[in-house]
Image 1 (tube, rainbow, N blue to C red):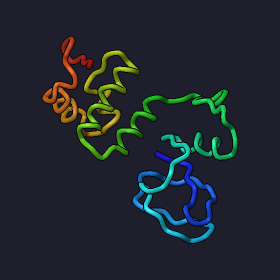
Image 2 (cartoon, one colour; image 1 turned 180 degrees about the vertical axis):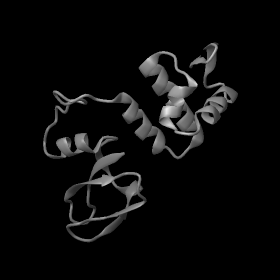
Image 3 (cartoon, rainbow, N blue to C red; image 1 turned 135 degrees about the vertical axis):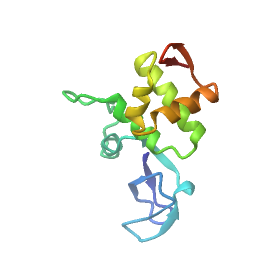
Image 4 (cartoon, rainbow, N blue to C red; image 1 turned 30 degrees about the horizontal axis):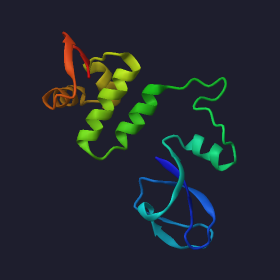
Length: 138
């Protein structure tokens, strides 16, 4: 997740990675803990954050002529989630939003090599249920 923040010392705005614990202002050199900064805007796509930072307030989530890959966006969200329960919830909700119902192979595309483990974990926690053999939904 990326965000636009203001430096508490010099008040200049900049873009930072919100997943880091601390950040150093390139203008005045002051270090700050990321979670203490006021975030003016945040998004998982750095390109969108850059457009907003440059003054484009009506930023489309998909640029003209550009194919947006929702699976890539979902994979990014999953890879940056630290809490396993939240990660499982994001996978289940995201795949259901995209596909309506999903398979273990769909989970495998998000978490290579761990599709079976994550699907079983979602079933054990009752996040998903099997509607047909090998097909799942929330």
